[in-house]
Image (tube, rainbow, N blue to C red):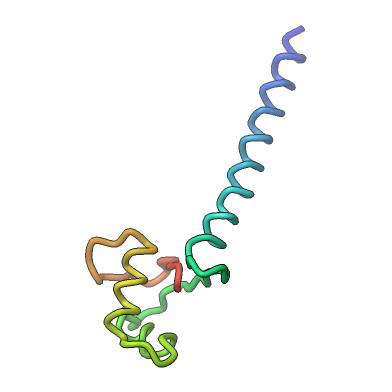
Length: 89
C-alpha cells in the first residue's frame, strides 16, 4: 500500500514540473508584449547592458532598450554578471 502512495506523489511532482515548464514558456512568449517571443541571452565576461543594447536595439534608443531589459528581468540596477541569463525584448 505504501508503494501506491509513493507512486501517486511521484505523478503529482511530475505534473507540477510539466506545468511549470509550460507556464515558463508562456511567460517568455508573453514577456515581449507585442506577440513576438522574447529572446534570452547569457551574459559573457565584459558585457554590460549598454553593449547588449548597442548590439540588439536595432534602431532604438539604447537607454530605452536598457530600461526594457531591466523591466523584463525585474532588475533594480544595471549590473550584470557573466553567466547571468537575461530576457531580451
